[in-house]
Length: 345
Image 1 (cartoon, rainbow, N blue to C red):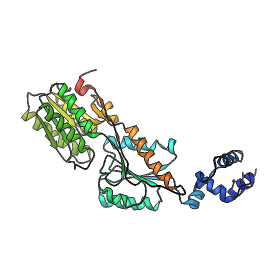
Image 2: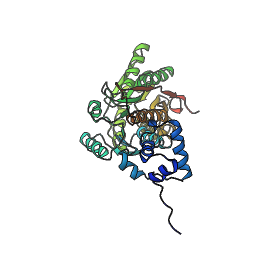
Image 3: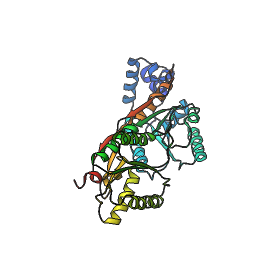
């Protein structure tokens, strides 16, 4: 049996009585054709059972349909879940992803960006913190960041300030004697700084005793556990008979703290209430489900890819109109009350 012939642009041109140039425009710049002509060519592709040669198309127009992603790492459950949701957008937008993990090393991330540019990516999504947005903007490709400094590039972030208020309000509602926010040192230009500010403003407004505890946690579980064990020992020494409301900066840290308390007491002690941040899967799957301020991760991922695709599609037009200013979208967080504040449900 002879092999089935691959359908070429020449075959499509003969079938439709259009020129090969017109057929090429259909694939590379479809909006340059009338809707009627687009429909004629689309029907011809169906009639001819055309199967697109992706490699040939890339060589012809330089469009790879690749999007680059750089994330800090996968130890934080928020980042792993966000990556999962971004990758799932392939079904909606048809773009493939090249993913690099930066591990917070600036020069390494610059090398990764050079590698991605060599693969002719059409756009870039960045969750890592190391490279300033000014430098990213100079790459001259569409860029969208998530939860990082974003002055010169487009971004999608959670309303972190509202999240800080939600967490502190929940702990205050349960009449905690003293409130704590445990977090890594955070520059004010980073969106997550809003969590700190929201927490502080609510505590000051309500006249609540409070403290922000800044710690470098590292990336490995063992490092995080060591730091939080020291924090826990300090809290128990200073506030032995007080009801302590603790707002952790993310669910990964909150889960480690819950594990330490359960190993020590065999249960969640009544004088500890804990709220995390992200609503990543670990908050629901923890041995004691964790109350958390939920980032709408699926919505953030969809908005980020959609915003990027809009910019990439604009560049493919005959007369593109690129963004004059970065677009910054803010997504409202949702508070989830679970057993670390509400007791067994």
